[in-house]
Length: 378
Image (cartoon, rainbow, N blue to C red):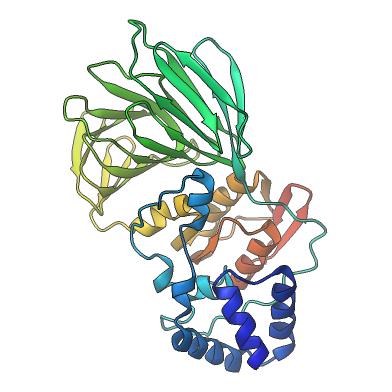
């Protein structure tokens, strides 16, 4: 137990070596007494204050490849001991009551014939003249001028600096395939993090009177303040007007509407003839009208930008849509789609079989063949 406690601390702090991880899982599997082990781990967690050694933002910092710290929305993982505990256990496993105790995660299911790696930093940049430039974390080096704006791609990000000197507005498009995400620094200093299967079209240099971009898929925005030039995001004939704020837009084609979640500042959303000003902590779904949620779960909406997923009573098919995009896989259902809901969270750095091991705790089972994942009927 002393060795298991030591390895648990190494795992929870993210400092375990490959050999230590393997030994940790072997000891967990060999222990056999789940209730006792769960109690022991909770005591170790509280005694050693292991949350101090875990950084829930490490993934985003690595993606952005910038030395400056990334602003924390609030300590997401501090309240989710289970996720920190094993890197991917269900949320509230230790800190909330359950009618039935959650099982301790065991070694990865060895029944899968192959594995699929998680998404990576990568995108395709299409310039105004139609030139296509592939981008990745290794950094296809790019340095060029376009209408007075310098475009530079290095260390896994693309950055625009300088204002446009051209009368003609030159539009670029950044596109992520399934299994990719990529950060973008616009010419006004605004930061955009583009999620898998998404795109953003924007001017290389914003004109003097406006800042307008077009988005598909999911993107996180941190908008540079400029009272003279409101920032406008268009998506599927819906509009989000910003003065200076942080917010998330989720606008995939299979979704029932454009989902806007406000973290900081204020935005005005418009759909058809309807308009609504959002306050921090609110969420709006723009479809034929505007559906407002005044007590939105911000963490659930933006966890992806910090390298994680979080769900609160989400239908399993909703979860699997995110999984399909991030792992670039095809998902099919054997029989009717499950109606089960999932409450939990996991890191986007998990391999697919590690993730499936978590989801199997809900009683759903899977068959993985190459990049085809079958959700089996119960």
